[in-house]
Image (tube, rainbow, N blue to C red; front, side, top):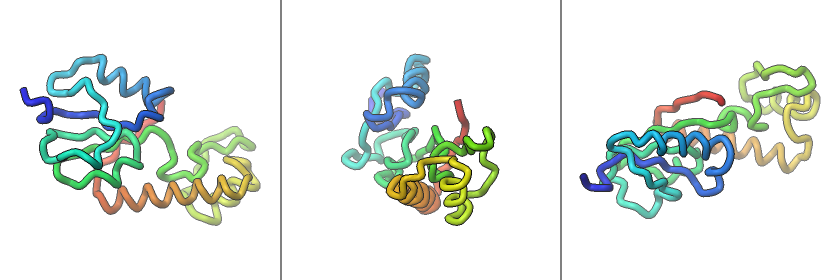
Length: 148
């Protein structure tokens, strides 16, 4: 079988530690037929048309997917729809029920303590979340959302 005509997992090296790495490695260790054991850390410099499917595990890689082959995106945290990335309000000890919005999430950060109160971190969280959402909407990639 041509090694490129397979399903490949795509995950930056920095995410291969911790929860995402454990999940991706468990997929690789299951030795599914047609799934490569090699992880692609980048997809911007490859001929994507030669792949059967790219399973993307980080929203930052979505901007490099050119639509030359099918792709699926697994969401491993809440950063796409929560600027703090936690979807948790520590002051209440509960999951955040708000939809992402500038006013609601600013209240969450500075009053409820759901994330950092450092302005640069709050701004960075909003930038990441809104850029991830824009990429997902533009690329029309199916999302599998779950937590572990």
